[in-house]
Amino acid sequence: MRRPHIRSLAVAVAVTTAATGLAGTAFAGPDAGAGQAAVAQSSAASVVSAAHAAAFAHASATGVSQGDELHATDVMLDPEGARHVRFTRTHQGMAVLGGDLVVHLTKQLSYAGVTRAADHTVKPATTDAKLSATQAEQKAASVAKGDAGTAQLVVDARDGASALAYQVTVADSGTTEGGGSRTVVVDAVTGKVRSNTPDSDEFLSPELLETLRERGEVADPATGVGTLSAGLTSTSAAAAASAYPKTANGTGKSLFVGVVPLKTTQTARTTFQLKDPTRYGTETRDAKGSYTESFSRGTKITTKNDVFGNGATSSRNSAAADAQYGITKTLDFYKKTFGRKGIANNSKPAKAMVHWGSKIANAFWDPTCGCMLYGDGDGDMFKKPLVALDVTGHELTHGVVDATAKLEPTRVDSDGNQYGEPGALNESLADIFGSNVEFFANNAKDKPDYLIGEEMGLDQKFLRRLDHPSLDVLEGTIDYWSTQTYDTEVHAGSGVSSHAYYLLAEGSGKKTIGGVQYDSPTYDGSTVKGIGRTKATAIFYRALTRYMVSSTDFHDARTATLKAAKDLYGLNSTEYLTVNQAWAAVNVTTANTPAAHR
Image (cartoon, rainbow, N blue to C red; front, side, top):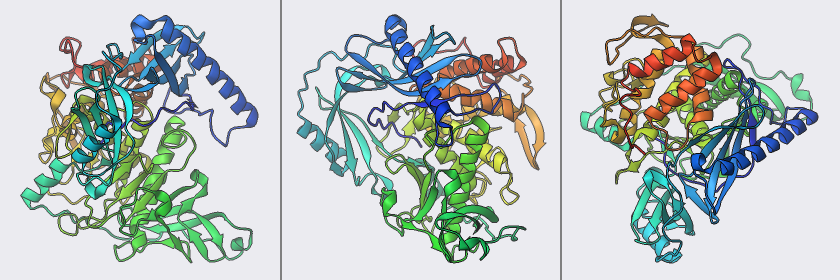
């Protein structure tokens, strides 16, 4: 699950491009030539300047007003000419929660439109707080049962509001699994708690875990080391004679994906570290049962023979091999498919800690740590670490969403369950791209499919599925949109857009793909002919990065994917028409768009 955590506003700009298909080239990054990087930064600066000016020149459309400042967080230069700048906003120096927007420009840098999270003014009725910062901190500490940090005045423009509020980060929360941090937003005038949300993203929701306990289910997936593939051997003695550290060719004997090659770092003649120099220094460490959210406190994982794990839980390094393999495959998928350099597209490493906490039956994307955290299971309901490939692809995609649209749930209940279409769309995108990571890896031990969590050992044989979401009875996932969907639990609601994606990629009806049987229904009984996974994925990624913001719901997502299809394939293309058909097939249409749903 993704939480509505608003961090400090960044001014640094990441420059990306996307080609008309899936492939793209990133300008920014250490592997770019100095001249090319300088040109890219110069180009980015001019685009940001033009977008900033256009936002204020078209204030009636963009919603910016006197007292607002815009801070660019992403610049996208499309090969066909369009430019897009993603901004966060401050008002009179205060961060605006839900104030994000994307300004779209032509190749000539003229204004072409805007995608905005708040469709109302972000100016609060008063800027005079009745609560003190200390009172807000005390309130936050009380509701989150932890240690409150310094309260910061913000403008809360989410969910149709425009209120003066305090934002407080509460560490070591007694209401969060593993004692993680929470972000509490307190109204600065009334003292009401406007939101109280965990900062980490859990793969399994509190509601699902309770359902599994009530059913008495035990998830004990079969695992095995498999056979050592040719060429997966440690670095030779001759190669080890050169200077250190250096890149080595290691082997992972994992729990879920068999024996796999891993790029590692050789630090001495007989010392190899689970750190990949070829992927920005991406690394997995051992939390040793601690609850730390600081990656530097994790224990470095090293071996003497460059082999990590034994294919069973008897070796602590087996889970680490799964984690490192899953992370590197996710990075490779995003880079080779979209030209994305790292989760935040900033050429920085992805990180993970395995064996996190004690008896934790979950896995997390933790933005505080900037890394993946994997529990070992509780030993009762979940017998093994949650390090399956699609779990990693799913959770790291939350990191990608966090770096782009920042889709947020509209509310969180007292148990930590999240609700609302933007949060459901976030979960859906994580499932969509998580399944694509499986297709990209094409691992014989974890064959690619449109199922999520099929390696977990659940009685229903999967956690969620994209072709017919309502076959997930554990979470009550839905196939089609209705007026009730806007306040559906996010994993249950994710079925709407996941189903639309599957129909776009593969079409409706019965088919067998990779040995798995699918039968995707439609709301109106229509027949949808898919355009293929490659094109469908290109459309959804472009929609996410260009046309989605923190409040995007399913009808907004339909509009975003139609714009993306038009960009990539043309207004009258089969691809564009099929996007429209796929959303209609899950009952998301222009005709039933809610009059006011923000």
